[in-house]
Length: 142
Image 1 (cartoon, rainbow, N blue to C red):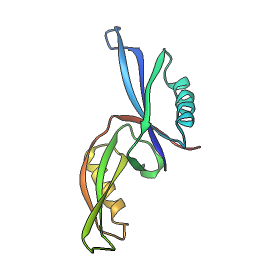
Image 2: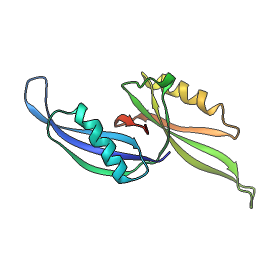
Image 3: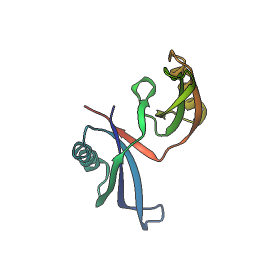
Image 4: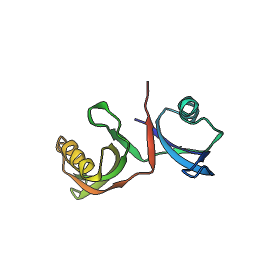
């Protein structure tokens, strides 16, 4: 997968009826920046009813998105794992980092889901970190 992160800024109303600026980050499965922008604009047509501005699109280090049962949760957690392997030339242990995004209700369930996922790996894997993500939605390939 090729994921890009897009940041969007728009005006909204707070609980007291005052206008405030909101900033949101979306993760988009796209092959190019142009495709990512087109997908984001299509998504924003229905999601935001006020003026919005795409402040940036950049390549994401997230390589995989885990969604339980195909249902998207309201909370996304970012995990960093290290795939442990031996260098074929030197035989020394080397680690390759990989980032995943996990949709779950809370961090404990996200960790449980991650542990279940990495149990399917054939080579050793270490969980380096898991925590809140600033991503509010994932826009996948259709």
